[in-house]
Image (cartoon, rainbow, N blue to C red; front, top):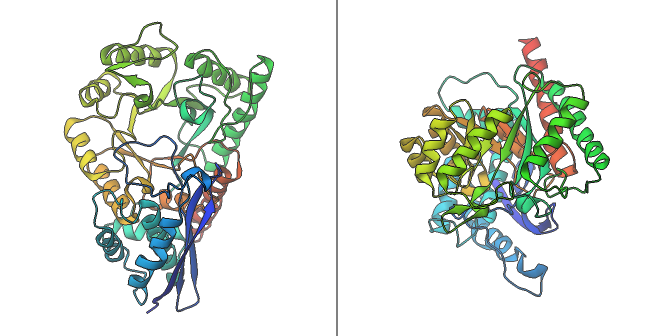
Length: 424
């Protein structure tokens, strides 16, 4: 039986140039697994704590040397000699070592880097691709669903905290219609993405790129961004509501103040009921298949009402749920959304993320497995999405190396699954 020989962490940079944690799990079989963790810009207040140094003389306080030290000096000695194929047991040990509800002592970034590294190491010693190992963890002794590539949602225009600051809505997506092979979906998304740039140039708009690879134009309203994407879809010879739908990550908590929502599309700030009416009208005007965080993260009554008003729309909870078990339980009870946005770094371990996804699956909700705005070239999240049978993935635009790494990994997995199906 393979054993963990050493665990070594170091500080690296993410796609925004901020430090993050990379951890190497070394086995006595000479196998090595390397995991790096992402970081969010738009952070929900119910997320596990990402430990930063706070030293303003170094990376403006964003350094992670404390988290690195916690891995090397506190966590590593406890894992030496342990079996990496004991994910739940080792994750429970990490949680116990931290001892806080929100992982603020050791840092969720430190803990997740180790938890993910353990998962990857276990796949190595079993000779399995990571997605198959994750599938075994997720389904345990239950009958496994056939592995498939989730439907990607592509972020083409960045607003809110990911863009230039002039659009309140954080992300404007295209959502391919189901039924196509992944390689066809990726080709279609890239064609629309390239056409969006042409449309922006033609209209004299800025076409610089935001945090997640989508364009960050100087448009006047959020509806203008939707119109640009619709124009790009039409010009790229694809058909709206046949080939492609639209999606939004509103991130409404960030334009909510004193009980009201203020966006540039409306002269006056709106209360919850008025914003729900606005969304209802928006869905009539545009084929919105998916809408994420449409209301403030504690506006529970509004969320439940919105789900009833938009029964055919996938209403995704991100800040609302924060991949947090207690928040998910409440959302299921109150029917506050019909989909979970799953981010492992919101909760801090692979086992806890899997547990939350099992909960929403049992309740009949959909699952969207997501990246973060501050990413690395690590493509683990693509394997994870396939392994847990996610309905959708959210990896940003089909551009920038840290985003493309995930999309290219899905391409490789599709090829492997195709060969497996042919041989079987």
